[in-house]
Image 1 (cartoon, rainbow over the protein chains, first blue to last red):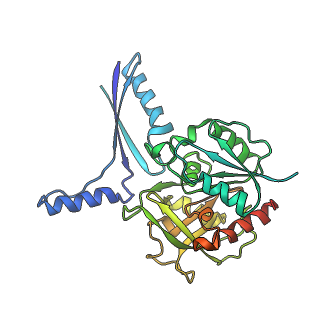
Image 2 (image 1 turned 90 degrees about the vertical axis):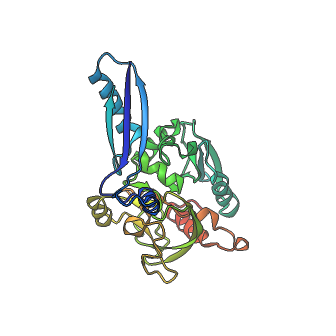
Image 3 (image 1 turned 180 degrees about the horizontal axis):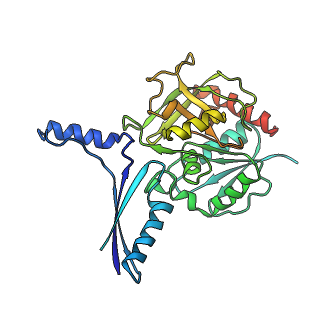
Length: 80
Length: 233
């Protein structure tokens, strides 16, 4: 059994208003060294697979078909 | 044979009854609900994908609804060139299903916006709009938190080249201003069609503006155009 951890974020070129709002709040807290905030989604999946590569491939299919919308989002998969 | 309109009902749709009422009791058309598990669209002359929060908008608006059994049938229906109108969440579902290009981001200012806005008719080529004139301004309510239409530069160019932009947000006088584009949509886009012109997605809710007694009846202007173009009347 593998654990897939998927991070989904808005593509770099797209303004992330939630991240921007959180960034403002962090500055109000005095955390001026925080330069940029991006807010995304985190998805964890337990995957039954024979190998790490197979688990990755399954997670990738899950991302492209459902979890991420590639018109506006990027995803990053880690398999443990 | 009388023409028939179908309104799809997903778990979480909440403008399905508004659309049904507008079609059946204001436009006097034969109208029926289609459950999201229905797969038979025979005899439907106009399909409406209504607004709401299908599947709670989990993951992304429309992302889960597009896997409902009825959506396979909708893909076939669209391929045959038959007309589909997606309103608000319906527009989002059509985007997620790949029947229209682009995607929806959260409104730029993060607020859910529920008010009357003005939209300008940008082209009359589609199967819905021939009763309208380019430049016509309609006052139609919006009600959404994720209506900030996004498409990349190439996509926008292709929408413009192919006359796929149906509506843009504008002022009451029909001017496109930053303020009028309240949700931050690319190029102030409020509605688009597919290449063939038989699928129209729009964020504003014409079905909520159908009766003068409720303060706004510009939706009738839109639907009269739809009915005339599609010869539904």
